Amino acid sequence: MKVVVLPANHYRRERWRNGAGWTREIVRLCGAAGHGWAADDDIGDDWDVRLSIAEIDRDCAFSAFPGIERELVLLRGDGIELTFADGRVVLVDPPHGRIRFDGADAPRCRLSYGPTHDFNLMWRPQRVEAQLLHRPLVGAMVFFAGAGVAWAVHLISGRAQFKDRPDLAPLQAGDSALIGAGDAQRMRVILDGGGELLLVRLALPAQD
Image 1 (cartoon, one colour):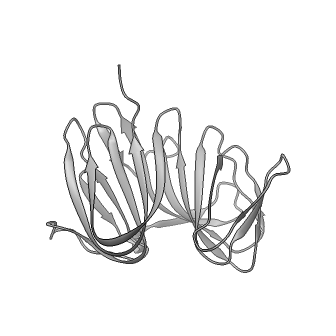
Image 2 (tube, helix red, strand yellow):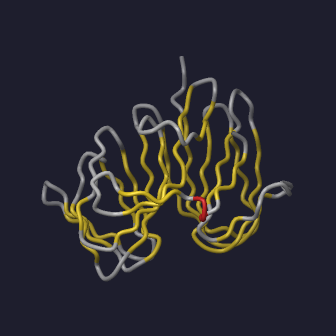
Image 3 (cartoon, one colour):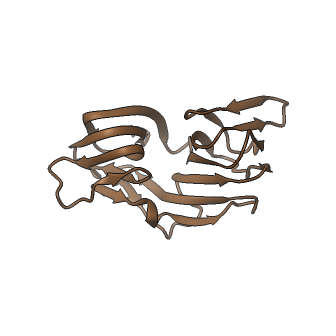
């Protein structure tokens, strides 16, 4: 995997695991030390990282994902209220409120007012280190990827283009991209444009 643009109209829409809602899956990724990262539609549930956009149009319970760490960012709508089994209540408010939690918790979700769209990062912490960042894009942004390190980009708003990559389509709001060198290579990529981004840095644990 080098640089791959993932247009929003190519996301796969499917039911939640518990049937309570819908999600638009951006990508599933597997990582292997010494081989980098691979995006594969045929890996089923044996993924290391999954990116998606949850569509929530009613009060519901989240699906349980034991062994998975989750981070959710509000993309659109007036927010949600999550109630956990231990009584903890967390508000995820606009603009772009976020929460990280154990996937096994499966909180109850109540809409603040009307439907929401929520960016959903899920990963296996025993296999992968993941960091989610919310950043403005003003001009050029430089990414470095190397052995075991990859980036996922989701464009919340605006427009962007990978500089010196005329073969790649520009990113419009809602599109995503993957940046990964693979093997032991190191690569430098420049994304140019204006808007807001969600950035996910993915790293495989260092090998002794």
